[in-house]
Image (cartoon, rainbow, N blue to C red; front, side, top):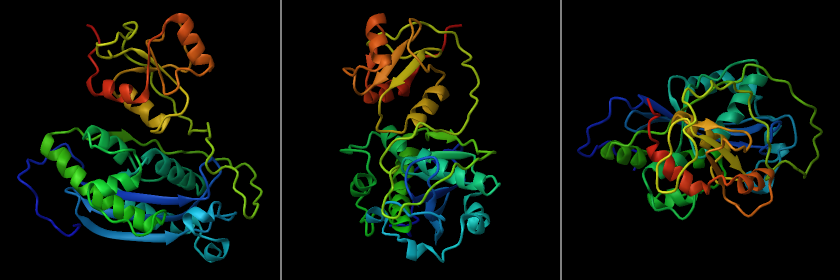
Length: 324
Protein backbone atom coordinates (compact mmCIF):
# COMPACT_ATOMS: atom_id res chain seq x y z
CA UNK A 1 0.00 0.00 0.00
CA UNK A 2 1.11 3.53 -0.72
CA UNK A 3 0.76 4.69 2.88
CA UNK A 4 2.91 1.88 4.22
CA UNK A 5 6.18 3.61 5.09
CA UNK A 6 7.90 0.63 6.62
CA UNK A 7 11.16 -0.15 4.88
CA UNK A 8 12.66 -3.62 4.76
CA UNK A 9 16.15 -4.11 6.12
CA UNK A 10 17.76 -2.26 3.25
CA UNK A 11 20.84 -0.11 3.00
CA UNK A 12 19.53 2.71 0.84
CA UNK A 13 22.02 3.63 -1.91
CA UNK A 14 23.30 7.18 -1.44
CA UNK A 15 23.44 7.59 -5.24
CA UNK A 16 19.68 7.19 -5.57
CA UNK A 17 17.62 10.35 -6.25
CA UNK A 18 15.98 12.33 -3.45
CA UNK A 19 12.54 12.44 -5.03
CA UNK A 20 10.43 11.33 -7.98
CA UNK A 21 7.55 12.66 -10.06
CA UNK A 22 5.49 9.77 -11.43
CA UNK A 23 3.81 11.15 -14.53
CA UNK A 24 1.18 10.12 -17.04
CA UNK A 25 -0.14 12.20 -19.92
CA UNK A 26 -2.99 11.44 -22.28
CA UNK A 27 -2.62 12.90 -25.75
CA UNK A 28 -4.38 13.49 -29.05
CA UNK A 29 -2.01 11.01 -30.68
CA UNK A 30 1.60 9.99 -30.99
CA UNK A 31 3.04 12.33 -33.61
CA UNK A 32 5.09 15.52 -33.51
CA UNK A 33 2.11 17.87 -33.62
CA UNK A 34 -0.09 16.00 -31.17
CA UNK A 35 -1.02 17.63 -27.89
CA UNK A 36 -1.49 16.79 -24.22
CA UNK A 37 -5.14 16.66 -23.13
CA UNK A 38 -4.68 15.56 -19.52
CA UNK A 39 -1.79 15.19 -17.12
CA UNK A 40 -1.25 13.69 -13.67
CA UNK A 41 1.67 13.73 -11.28
CA UNK A 42 2.25 11.71 -8.13
CA UNK A 43 5.15 13.18 -6.14
CA UNK A 44 7.15 10.58 -4.20
CA UNK A 45 9.94 10.92 -1.67
CA UNK A 46 13.30 9.17 -1.92
CA UNK A 47 11.84 5.83 -0.73
CA UNK A 48 8.85 5.97 -3.05
CA UNK A 49 6.26 7.14 -0.51
CA UNK A 50 3.53 9.40 -1.90
CA UNK A 51 3.67 13.03 -0.88
CA UNK A 52 0.78 14.35 -2.96
CA UNK A 53 -0.88 14.06 -6.36
CA UNK A 54 -2.28 16.44 -8.98
CA UNK A 55 -4.42 16.14 -12.11
CA UNK A 56 -5.64 18.49 -14.79
CA UNK A 57 -7.42 18.46 -18.12
CA UNK A 58 -5.80 20.49 -20.92
CA UNK A 59 -7.50 22.12 -23.89
CA UNK A 60 -5.46 20.98 -26.92
CA UNK A 61 -7.06 23.53 -29.25
CA UNK A 62 -7.68 20.77 -31.75
CA UNK A 63 -9.54 17.48 -32.21
CA UNK A 64 -9.01 15.27 -29.12
CA UNK A 65 -8.03 12.24 -31.18
CA UNK A 66 -8.90 8.68 -30.07
CA UNK A 67 -11.82 9.37 -27.73
CA UNK A 68 -12.54 5.64 -27.65
CA UNK A 69 -9.23 5.21 -25.79
CA UNK A 70 -8.97 8.15 -23.39
CA UNK A 71 -12.69 9.07 -23.17
CA UNK A 72 -12.11 12.84 -23.40
CA UNK A 73 -14.38 14.61 -25.88
CA UNK A 74 -14.15 18.11 -27.33
CA UNK A 75 -17.04 19.20 -25.10
CA UNK A 76 -15.21 17.99 -22.01
CA UNK A 77 -12.04 19.84 -22.98
CA UNK A 78 -13.38 23.12 -24.35
CA UNK A 79 -13.37 24.88 -20.97
CA UNK A 80 -10.16 23.26 -19.73
CA UNK A 81 -7.06 25.46 -19.29
CA UNK A 82 -4.50 25.74 -22.07
CA UNK A 83 -1.13 24.16 -21.44
CA UNK A 84 0.50 27.57 -21.01
CA UNK A 85 -1.96 28.23 -18.16
CA UNK A 86 -0.93 25.11 -16.21
CA UNK A 87 2.74 25.11 -17.21
CA UNK A 88 3.95 26.84 -14.03
CA UNK A 89 2.09 24.52 -11.66
CA UNK A 90 3.11 21.47 -13.66
CA UNK A 91 6.73 22.63 -13.53
CA UNK A 92 6.56 23.06 -9.78
CA UNK A 93 5.58 19.43 -9.42
CA UNK A 94 8.40 18.22 -11.67
CA UNK A 95 11.17 20.45 -10.35
CA UNK A 96 14.17 18.79 -8.65
CA UNK A 97 12.73 15.31 -9.21
CA UNK A 98 13.34 12.40 -11.54
CA UNK A 99 10.47 12.02 -14.00
CA UNK A 100 9.16 8.46 -13.80
CA UNK A 101 6.84 7.09 -16.48
CA UNK A 102 6.00 3.90 -18.32
CA UNK A 103 7.80 4.29 -21.67
CA UNK A 104 9.18 7.54 -20.26
CA UNK A 105 10.63 8.82 -23.53
CA UNK A 106 7.09 9.31 -24.87
CA UNK A 107 5.79 11.25 -21.86
CA UNK A 108 9.00 13.30 -21.72
CA UNK A 109 8.89 14.24 -25.41
CA UNK A 110 5.22 15.27 -25.21
CA UNK A 111 5.95 17.40 -22.13
CA UNK A 112 9.09 18.92 -23.67
CA UNK A 113 7.20 19.88 -26.84
CA UNK A 114 4.39 21.53 -24.88
CA UNK A 115 6.86 23.62 -22.87
CA UNK A 116 8.70 24.58 -26.06
CA UNK A 117 5.41 25.73 -27.63
CA UNK A 118 4.83 27.85 -24.54
CA UNK A 119 8.36 29.31 -24.91
CA UNK A 120 9.36 27.78 -21.59
CA UNK A 121 11.63 24.94 -20.45
CA UNK A 122 10.50 21.92 -18.46
CA UNK A 123 12.51 21.62 -15.22
CA UNK A 124 13.39 17.97 -15.76
CA UNK A 125 16.98 16.78 -15.89
CA UNK A 126 16.58 13.02 -15.58
CA UNK A 127 13.96 10.42 -16.39
CA UNK A 128 13.43 6.81 -15.38
CA UNK A 129 11.45 4.38 -17.51
CA UNK A 130 9.67 1.68 -15.53
CA UNK A 131 9.95 -0.63 -18.55
CA UNK A 132 13.73 -0.36 -18.33
CA UNK A 133 13.64 -0.77 -14.55
CA UNK A 134 11.53 -3.94 -14.79
CA UNK A 135 14.14 -5.36 -17.16
CA UNK A 136 16.96 -4.43 -14.80
CA UNK A 137 15.08 -6.30 -12.06
CA UNK A 138 14.40 -9.29 -14.33
CA UNK A 139 10.70 -9.21 -13.46
CA UNK A 140 8.87 -12.19 -15.01
CA UNK A 141 6.41 -10.12 -17.05
CA UNK A 142 4.62 -11.51 -20.14
CA UNK A 143 4.98 -8.14 -21.89
CA UNK A 144 5.83 -4.51 -21.15
CA UNK A 145 2.29 -3.18 -20.68
CA UNK A 146 1.45 -1.18 -17.56
CA UNK A 147 -1.32 -3.64 -16.74
CA UNK A 148 1.23 -6.48 -16.60
CA UNK A 149 3.50 -4.53 -14.26
CA UNK A 150 0.51 -3.66 -12.08
CA UNK A 151 -0.67 -7.28 -11.96
CA UNK A 152 2.80 -8.45 -10.93
CA UNK A 153 2.64 -6.24 -7.81
CA UNK A 154 -1.07 -6.83 -7.15
CA UNK A 155 -2.09 -3.28 -8.04
CA UNK A 156 -5.71 -2.92 -9.17
CA UNK A 157 -6.25 -0.62 -12.14
CA UNK A 158 -9.63 1.13 -12.08
CA UNK A 159 -9.61 3.38 -15.17
CA UNK A 160 -7.05 2.48 -17.80
CA UNK A 161 -5.95 5.42 -19.99
CA UNK A 162 -7.13 7.92 -17.40
CA UNK A 163 -4.02 9.95 -16.52
CA UNK A 164 -4.70 10.12 -12.78
CA UNK A 165 -5.41 6.41 -12.37
CA UNK A 166 -2.53 5.39 -14.62
CA UNK A 167 -0.18 7.58 -12.56
CA UNK A 168 -1.56 6.08 -9.32
CA UNK A 169 -1.07 2.55 -10.61
CA UNK A 170 2.46 3.33 -11.72
CA UNK A 171 3.29 4.97 -8.38
CA UNK A 172 2.07 1.86 -6.54
CA UNK A 173 4.11 -0.42 -8.81
CA UNK A 174 7.19 1.82 -8.75
CA UNK A 175 7.58 1.79 -4.97
CA UNK A 176 8.19 -1.98 -4.64
CA UNK A 177 10.35 -1.85 -7.78
CA UNK A 178 12.46 0.88 -6.18
CA UNK A 179 12.79 -1.09 -2.94
CA UNK A 180 13.78 -4.24 -4.85
CA UNK A 181 16.43 -2.28 -6.74
CA UNK A 182 17.80 -0.84 -3.48
CA UNK A 183 17.80 -4.23 -1.78
CA UNK A 184 19.66 -5.92 -4.65
CA UNK A 185 22.03 -3.04 -5.36
CA UNK A 186 20.63 -2.42 -8.85
CA UNK A 187 21.74 0.77 -10.56
CA UNK A 188 18.67 2.74 -11.58
CA UNK A 189 18.41 3.24 -15.38
CA UNK A 190 18.45 7.05 -15.18
CA UNK A 191 18.72 8.95 -18.45
CA UNK A 192 19.39 12.59 -19.15
CA UNK A 193 16.54 14.79 -20.38
CA UNK A 194 17.43 17.43 -22.92
CA UNK A 195 14.70 20.08 -23.15
CA UNK A 196 13.68 21.58 -26.45
CA UNK A 197 14.60 25.23 -26.77
CA UNK A 198 12.94 25.98 -30.11
CA UNK A 199 9.60 25.06 -31.63
CA UNK A 200 7.80 25.64 -34.90
CA UNK A 201 4.27 24.32 -35.26
CA UNK A 202 3.19 23.00 -38.61
CA UNK A 203 -0.45 23.65 -39.53
CA UNK A 204 -2.92 21.11 -38.20
CA UNK A 205 -6.39 20.83 -39.67
CA UNK A 206 -8.74 19.40 -37.03
CA UNK A 207 -11.04 16.66 -38.33
CA UNK A 208 -13.62 15.54 -35.81
CA UNK A 209 -13.68 11.80 -35.33
CA UNK A 210 -10.44 11.23 -37.20
CA UNK A 211 -6.91 11.06 -35.92
CA UNK A 212 -4.60 9.67 -38.55
CA UNK A 213 -1.48 9.98 -36.47
CA UNK A 214 -2.64 7.80 -33.60
CA UNK A 215 -1.08 4.38 -33.73
CA UNK A 216 1.34 5.37 -36.47
CA UNK A 217 5.01 5.93 -35.93
CA UNK A 218 6.74 9.25 -36.34
CA UNK A 219 10.39 9.59 -37.25
CA UNK A 220 10.58 13.07 -35.74
CA UNK A 221 12.67 13.51 -32.63
CA UNK A 222 14.00 16.57 -30.86
CA UNK A 223 17.23 17.74 -32.43
CA UNK A 224 20.02 16.37 -30.24
CA UNK A 225 23.71 16.80 -30.86
CA UNK A 226 25.35 13.82 -29.25
CA UNK A 227 29.06 13.97 -28.51
CA UNK A 228 31.22 11.61 -30.56
CA UNK A 229 31.95 8.23 -29.04
CA UNK A 230 35.24 8.57 -27.13
CA UNK A 231 36.29 4.97 -27.74
CA UNK A 232 37.84 3.45 -30.90
CA UNK A 233 35.88 0.80 -32.74
CA UNK A 234 37.17 -2.59 -31.51
CA UNK A 235 35.57 -4.45 -34.42
CA UNK A 236 32.65 -6.81 -34.76
CA UNK A 237 30.63 -8.36 -32.00
CA UNK A 238 31.33 -12.07 -31.46
CA UNK A 239 28.66 -14.43 -30.20
CA UNK A 240 29.35 -15.56 -26.65
CA UNK A 241 31.47 -12.52 -25.86
CA UNK A 242 30.35 -9.20 -24.36
CA UNK A 243 29.86 -5.98 -26.22
CA UNK A 244 32.88 -3.69 -25.94
CA UNK A 245 32.90 0.08 -25.62
CA UNK A 246 33.34 1.75 -29.00
CA UNK A 247 31.41 -0.88 -30.97
CA UNK A 248 29.22 0.57 -33.73
CA UNK A 249 25.57 -0.43 -33.20
CA UNK A 250 22.84 0.00 -35.83
CA UNK A 251 19.09 -0.52 -35.39
CA UNK A 252 16.49 -1.57 -37.95
CA UNK A 253 12.71 -1.86 -37.68
CA UNK A 254 10.32 -1.54 -34.76
CA UNK A 255 11.32 -2.14 -31.15
CA UNK A 256 9.08 -2.78 -28.16
CA UNK A 257 11.00 -0.19 -26.15
CA UNK A 258 11.26 3.23 -27.76
CA UNK A 259 14.27 3.33 -30.08
CA UNK A 260 15.63 6.47 -28.46
CA UNK A 261 15.59 4.79 -25.06
CA UNK A 262 17.68 1.92 -26.42
CA UNK A 263 20.06 4.34 -28.12
CA UNK A 264 20.44 6.39 -24.93
CA UNK A 265 21.25 3.29 -22.91
CA UNK A 266 23.77 2.16 -25.54
CA UNK A 267 25.51 5.54 -25.57
CA UNK A 268 25.55 5.59 -21.79
CA UNK A 269 27.36 2.24 -21.92
CA UNK A 270 30.03 3.67 -24.23
CA UNK A 271 28.76 2.32 -27.56
CA UNK A 272 28.57 4.22 -30.85
CA UNK A 273 25.16 4.53 -32.58
CA UNK A 274 25.47 4.14 -36.34
CA UNK A 275 22.73 5.49 -38.60
CA UNK A 276 23.58 3.06 -41.39
CA UNK A 277 25.24 -0.33 -41.88
CA UNK A 278 28.74 -0.53 -43.34
CA UNK A 279 31.69 -2.91 -43.16
CA UNK A 280 32.65 -1.14 -39.92
CA UNK A 281 29.33 -1.89 -38.19
CA UNK A 282 29.86 -4.12 -35.16
CA UNK A 283 26.26 -5.28 -34.69
CA UNK A 284 22.77 -4.84 -36.16
CA UNK A 285 19.82 -4.97 -33.76
CA UNK A 286 16.51 -5.96 -35.35
CA UNK A 287 13.42 -7.95 -34.37
CA UNK A 288 12.83 -8.90 -38.01
CA UNK A 289 16.09 -10.20 -39.49
CA UNK A 290 14.25 -11.63 -42.48
CA UNK A 291 12.98 -8.26 -43.66
CA UNK A 292 14.34 -6.65 -46.81
CA UNK A 293 15.27 -3.28 -45.31
CA UNK A 294 18.45 -1.69 -46.61
CA UNK A 295 20.16 -2.28 -43.25
CA UNK A 296 19.33 -5.99 -43.04
CA UNK A 297 20.29 -6.52 -46.70
CA UNK A 298 23.64 -4.79 -46.15
CA UNK A 299 24.22 -6.68 -42.91
CA UNK A 300 23.81 -9.98 -44.76
CA UNK A 301 26.12 -8.89 -47.57
CA UNK A 302 28.82 -7.72 -45.14
CA UNK A 303 28.41 -10.62 -42.73
CA UNK A 304 27.51 -8.22 -39.92
CA UNK A 305 26.32 -10.00 -36.76
CA UNK A 306 22.59 -9.61 -36.01
CA UNK A 307 20.73 -9.95 -32.69
CA UNK A 308 17.21 -9.15 -31.60
CA UNK A 309 16.15 -6.49 -29.09
CA UNK A 310 15.87 -8.89 -26.14
CA UNK A 311 19.40 -10.20 -26.67
CA UNK A 312 20.74 -6.68 -27.08
CA UNK A 313 19.21 -5.47 -23.81
CA UNK A 314 20.84 -8.42 -22.06
CA UNK A 315 24.19 -7.57 -23.64
CA UNK A 316 23.83 -3.98 -22.45
CA UNK A 317 24.01 -5.20 -18.86
CA UNK A 318 27.69 -6.04 -19.13
CA UNK A 319 29.60 -3.97 -21.70
CA UNK A 320 33.36 -4.49 -21.51
CA UNK A 321 35.66 -1.50 -21.12
CA UNK A 322 37.55 -0.22 -24.12
CA UNK A 323 41.14 -1.38 -24.55
CA UNK A 324 43.81 0.89 -23.22
